[in-house]
Image (cartoon, rainbow, N blue to C red):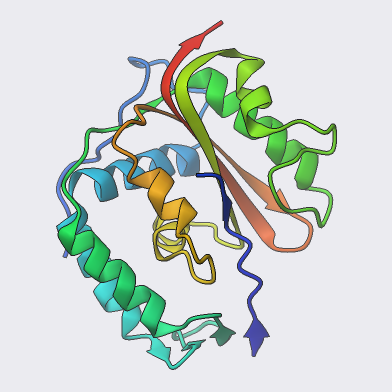
Length: 213
C-alpha cells in the first residue's frame, strides 16, 4: 500500500461541451493535457451539480481511508471517503460560474514553477529562486484584483487533477477548491510536467484580470 502525501497546496454522467476558452486560436502554447485541465476546470465551474456525479462514482472506490481503484496500488488518504462526500455536497449546492479564459503569460509563469521543481523533491509555492506565484505571473503581464495558485502532485489526467483539487483531502480550509470556484477569477494559466518525488505535477494560476505583456 502507498501512503499518499497530499501536498495539494493553495493560497487562497458525461457532461456536455468541451468548456475550453483560450485567446482565440492562439493556444498552441498549451499541451493536450494542459488544455484538458482548463476544460475540466470549466466543466466543474459551469456544471458543478452534474460534475458531482464523477465524485459519486469515485467515492465508491473508498473503503474507509483507503482508495482501492481496480488495477492500481491501494492509496491511504488522510480523510478518506468523508472528504469526497463533503465535496459532493458542496458541488450540489454550488451555483454555476463563468468560464475561465486561458492566458499565455500565466501559463508561462506556471511553467517556470514546473521547471524549478521537476528535477527536485521540492513542493510548495516558493520557487528555488525565491519567487512567489504573484511575482512569477507579473513577469509576463499585469494582474489586477487578486490571484491564486494551485499545485497538484501525483496525477497525470485532467479529471484526476481537478477532482483531487476539489476534494482537497487533508487541506482543512479547502483552499484549492475555493480557488477553482472563486467567482471573481476569469483568467487561468496551466503547466503540467514531471516531478522527481511524485512523478507528475500540475501548476494552475488564477487571476481576476490579466493583461499580457
